[in-house]
Amino acid sequence: VQLQAFGGGLVQAGGSLRLSCAASGRTLSSKSLGWFRQAPGMEREFVATIIRSDSRSYHAESVKGRFTISKDNAKNMVYLQMNSLKPEDTAVYYCAAASVFYGFPVIDQNKYDYWGQGTLVTVSS
Image 1 (cartoon, rainbow, N blue to C red):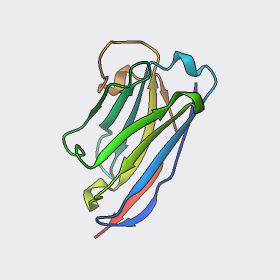
Image 2 (cartoon, helix red, strand yellow):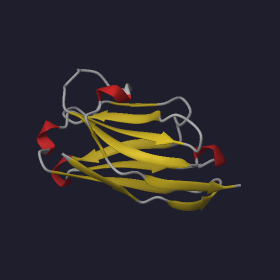
Image 3 (tube, helix red, strand yellow):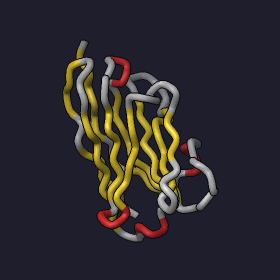
Image 4 (cartoon, rainbow, N blue to C red):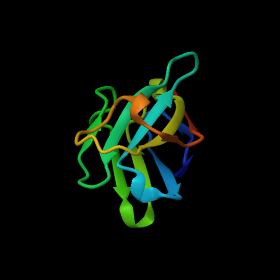
């Protein structure tokens, strides 16, 4: 599975962005799709995840109510709608796919097998 994230950019605090991630290759092997982010000097952290088969999703507390993960299986796309952006949301955002079906939303990045190259989101104050 190959993943390509795009849609990042510079936005003012309070603004919105929608990130997209295009999957290609053996996409049916992607059981969970997730977004993670890594701010400068910080470790990569979980943002949101969605189960491909039943659309159950889970969002990190820091983004709950502001970000929404969604997917389009027919187009092999996963999205992250980000609203009410804050400067602390500034990071490189990565999409990822897990090939194992765990039966629950997967927040552990070690369970993800495939990663996109990342797209930079910068939120100015």
